[in-house]
Amino acid sequence: MQFEKRFKPGIREGRITQSFRAWKRPQVKTGGRYRVHPIGMIQVDTIEHCRREAISSADARKAGFESTDALFDYLDRKSDRKSDRKSDRKNDASQPLYRVVFHYAGSGEDERPDTSPVDAADLDALRSRLMRMDRLASRGAWTRQTMGLIETLPATRAADLASRIRLETLVFKTNVRKLKRLGLTHSLETGYELSARGRQLLRKYATWS
Image (cartoon, rainbow, N blue to C red; front, top):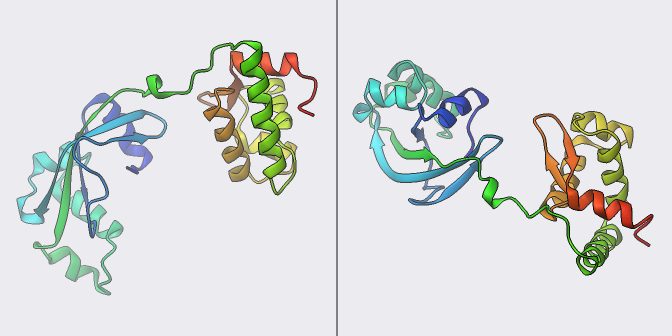
C-alpha cells in the first residue's frame, strides 16, 4: 500500500491503524502483508465497504487526520471519480469507500535476502549470475561498476552516485535493487553499502569475465 510520507511515522508508532480508499475494487486482502517503504511492513486486519456518514472523528484520527473534514478533503483530492464538480463529490455522503484496518508488522528485516559470507562455489554462482545480468543489459555491463561505486562511496545519495556514471537515478536505483535481491548490498538511511557477501565477491574477482 502507498502512503504519503507524513503518515509513515504514525503507522510505525501504532497511532495510525486504518486508511480509507476510494477504490473501484479492493487492492489488498485481509491477512495480506504489504511493504511501506522505508518503515517496514503492515498487515491488513480487515477490509470493508463503508460510507462517509459512517466515518467518525475517532476514525479520522486513526487514519492520521485531525477531523472528518480534513479526511474528506484529502479523499476528494485523491478520488479517481470523474465528476467535474468538486462540490458534488464533497456533498455526496453516500460515496462508497473501503476502510482498511491494519497494524504495523515490523521492519520486515527477517524477509531481507541473506547477506552473510558464502563459500567459493556460491561465489562462483553469484559471479555467473552477474555476468548474465550484464549480458542481458541493454546499456552494457553495469554490475561490477555499481558495486565498486558503492564500495568507494558508501552512504551517498543515489542521485549523486548515478550522476557519476551518467545514469538516470531511477535506472540506478533499479540496478541496486537487483543487487540487493542477491544479498550484495544494504540500503542505508542515505545511500547504500556493500554487504559482507558483496565485499567478499569484489575481493575474490578482479573482473567477472
